[in-house]
Length: 198
Image (cartoon, rainbow, N blue to C red):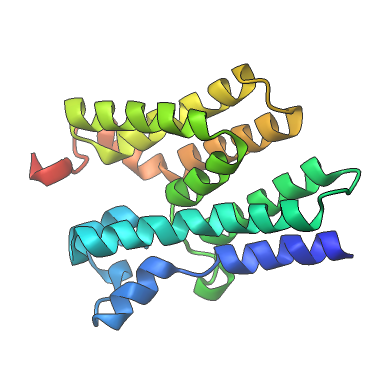
């Protein structure tokens, strides 16, 4: 029963739309401007770098903290690895399909960052490096996110993490790609917004 409570709690925590909340505090509904997304990229575009960074950290925390809590609580549980992964998946689904916003959420990149940091911090550093290089060279945040999401399961698998964690990484990466379907179409048409309006 405790395991199920942890999963449900993770989903509810993941559903908290920090970008939207921060925007509302300043009288801005981030869903009605920019890309219409509630994530850090759109918050950064509309409200500045500080609030964009704060949104990024809060959304990443939604993925990391529930998993840390579950790991502490389920320390000696026989299937701890599986349940911790389910907690991470629930937090991610909460961000992407939040209960509080009628299941219309963000694209999950920042929350995935927190989850992957729990699974394999070095993999996060490698994917962040790839993200920075892609954005620097081509100017597309979406392309950087997609590239990092594609690489993550590979690195986690090569690092010797459990099959459960590799499966979680594959699930999250696939959903990130699905949530970026419109961005992919714009990239193919060369219509995607570049960083700094380039």
